[in-house]
Length: 132
Image (tube, rainbow, N blue to C red; front, side):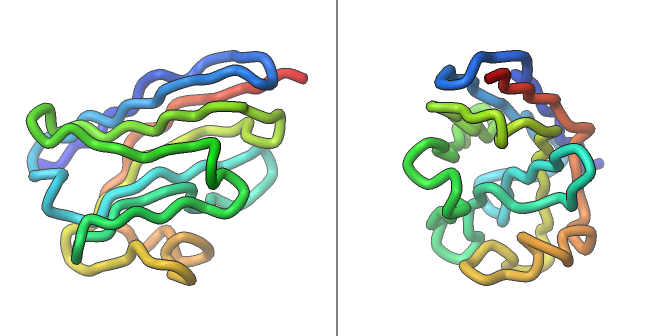
């Protein structure tokens, strides 16, 4: 059974850093498209960063490019999101997601936006609050 468990969220001041972790079980994380999403209060869930299943390349949302970095440790079957220079607008619940059936991580992908709910597997989320 596929399971994703996030950790690492918390309260941080603007300009600070956090590292989120997503531990996967029941599938091999390195072989599939996986990524991070966030949902701010009152807003839709959006894709933040992901790994492509086709070539392992990464995508980062424009607003986090240069501040956030997605990575993974295949030996630990764990994915990470290093978040630096955090801003209050980064506040939200962060989720990791995976879908082994198709390639969904690419620039302009609808699954990074309104169609996110089509992805099969989600973690329970970890809350990030950035104070100004």
